[in-house]
Length: 243
Image (cartoon, rainbow, N blue to C red; front, side, top):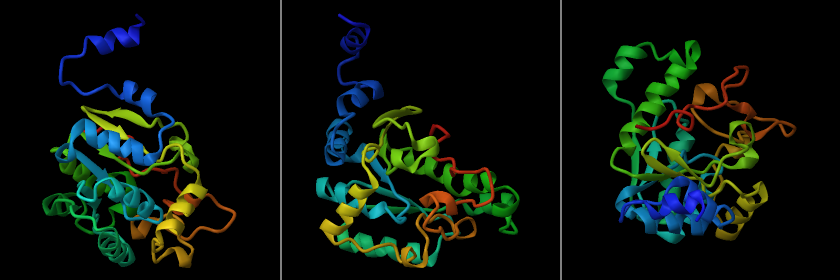
């Protein structure tokens, strides 16, 4: 018996499979199968999808809704989002029949203490992301033992080598779109007749918070418009392990 099998055999009855075991089993699985497996393993009450309702989000939400539209969806309403993103959230909730979308906001006392002038995004964008995204997400995920997100390897950078399943503190983190190509996203939008994010037509290929998002030209990476001119490439929710 190899070491991997030995560790699996010693796992207490009822314990969740490890991230490594799940990643091995699901490394070539279709996104729908990854989500269905996550749902089967932990149950709806312990599973959340985290979505920005950004330019590609509808594809993951569509696949999730086909599995179970009542899986909780966590949406981080940072206070700096485009109005078009908030409207798109509402459009997709109705279009896909999502039954449990939870809009999570930063704490008022935190904003008053750390960003009273609402200019932290300019002076310290990492700190701004921490109080408006990282901390609210950690709070929102407390009831859950696993979560799903929409990162893809084709997005490059730190995302180029993401596994299908990984550890996130004490939680399992599922990346069901890790293996898919951009053409697959396009195909899901087309087959399901999904509406595009309202800002795509204006040249925004990746949409985050308004002060830190700019238009992207055709010869640039889709995420080039995020934190343009800064070394920052991620908000932090995927690099800081949730407690």
